[in-house]
Length: 210
Image (cartoon, rainbow, N blue to C red; front, side, top):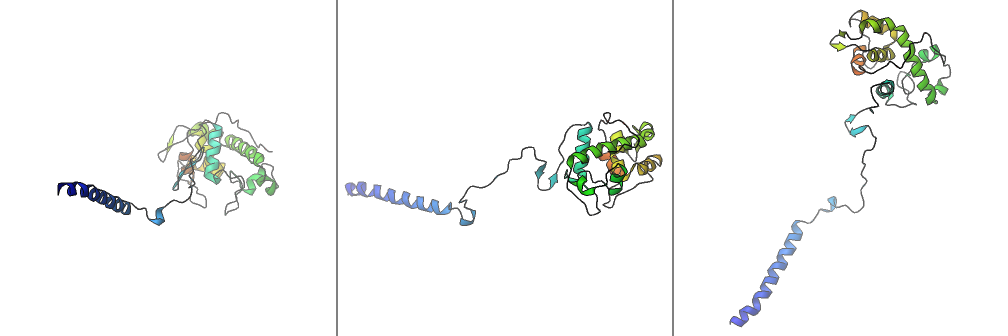
């Protein structure tokens, strides 16, 4: 009897372990819908400005003129030289046709297809606005209007948005004369968003042209 028991027990153990293995396999079986049958594409950001699907941030290129220029361009067109918005504003910095003509550009198509011209025109326009607003820059920089500290870069960014004349009115009325664009962005928004850049490299010029 004992010999028979010793003989049968190993077979019983093998049967039990085999059954357990099959049950475990069935429990951990991956559903067909979740199986990966081919390599998947994964993006690892490198010098990208998109950190997730809901937040898009501009590239940070310092706090001097270049950083100011690129941050403003990102706000205007996300840096797209060939952008034309619903109101007809053009290029990386979203210039109006009137401003282009004022600074000697009459061929809109050429302007839109020439990034180097857009970059040059932006710098010229900043120099022009700095000349027009030179007294207001001297008077108001360092003060606070509507809780926002006034800086030279904030003033110049606001002039790009609304024109130097409207920025003068805003400053001299201490914020009571607010101007907004067609999309609801106001001078006070640009004063705050683009404050603190060092614009000393830009020399104020009277009536500069291409």
